[in-house]
Amino acid sequence: MRAICLNGTLKRSPEESSGGSLSEVVMAALREEGVETDAIRLADHRIEPGTVSEAVVEGDEWPAIRERILAAEILVVATPTWFGQPSSAAKRALERMNPFLSETYDDGETPIAFNRVAGVVVVGKEDGAHHCISEISGALIDIGYTIPGQAWTYWNKGPGPGDEDWLTTNEREWSITTGRTAARNLLAVARALQGHPIPAPAPSGS
Figure 1: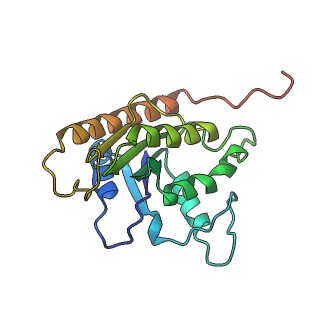
Figure 2: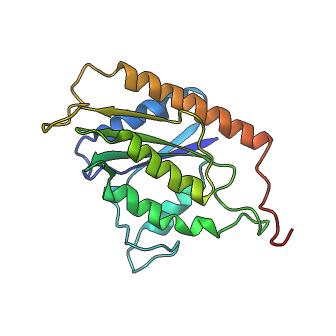
């Protein structure tokens, strides 16, 4: 079993990322269960706008990222909250995953995102976590991912301006416990789908 995290922080490495820190709670819990993990900080890569799997222009790194996504049965999308919305980096990755709607496994019938599960991690200095979870989950459901119950965790500073302080706060218990539960739920459903995969869609006209 393999899991990958797409970190939609707007910060480039090596700057610390709150989303990376909280998503690592989920990934670490998966590793404890023998899952291999991978992580991509999207801001570190050149991802051109578009809705195709192939490179849009020379130097577009999406095709290689796509291969790493498809090597995993479990996907975690981490994003900060900006104006109550997922980050532009997270949204761009979802846009580039749009072709998963029509791409299939080798049988030529089963959508390529079927029998994969996904969850969401949100951090921010403002409210909007549930909205971000809904937006990302809805997009991933559209392209074929299965979203288990409570396959998310989040941390918000609370209303009003100020610095996001996930990296320094002591108020982490709920987010960590919820993240570990998300990992358990993701893995349970991923294993269930391995034993009982979702069938290919019914042929048109049937």
